[in-house]
Length: 309
Ligand code: RRO
Image (cartoon, rainbow, N blue to C red; front, side, top):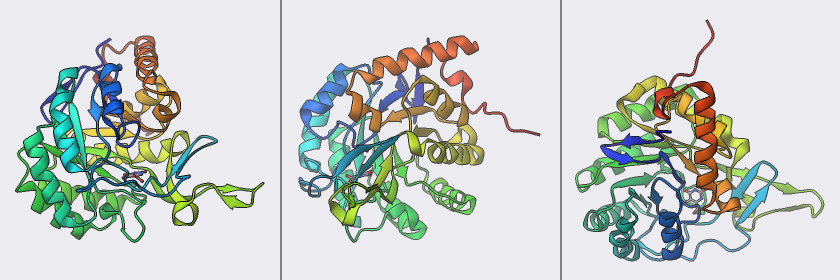
């Protein structure tokens, strides 16, 4: 089965990859992705300096998903810039996820990544877990200012990782900004931010940072993810590729994301829970799904979701 795709001129032999954050912080984790059946290697979102992240416990698997407040644990721009050229030996696209704690950080990161040469950069506008730092993607003016500044620096195609939006006016407003900037792809969605999971036995929160508030991922957020993929597809069609992320556990979930308009799919919670072997299972399952339905390739069903008259 042809599971290939193309994002911003970059060919992926398989349109499945890790979501940034899932098993992609250290050199060993990134190399394990390179040795797996993942179609690309996506790094953890990076900041100027290495960070330990938030106090533990900060990730918990729950019924139907996960909650996390990792707090951007990462090796820092210089370390990833050094690592990225070596990841090219795995012969699949390398996607660097760029974050920062201040607007100037992103500019510094863009320069470091230009020199390192990943195939694509995914600018993370949606980390929900840094105390006192709002998700940039919910502030449309700030998003435009930031992206205007980094656009002038980047020599590599860049896209953005967005938070979930819950109202069509917000999809339209952010889409206008991203079109004006000329981003080459969007990844939707990041975790559903600032949710709360309660342990009724212990009468307690389940993660330590931020009083237990954290980003929700996994199967329970799939309808939110699909709605965001679909909303952007309806605005752009195939003009700006969409990477669907959220709630993918099996081949049918991948099919649903692509039907809604995704050009590739990222795997978060179930990758953390199952390990990098998940990519082989998912490729088999989506292949079976497409064969059963008579589609000759993954991209041949893109956007084909039917609406009712
Ligand atoms: O590190 C995190 O806490 C984190 C980030 Br940067 C993100 O973008 N999304 C998320 O769920 N966790």
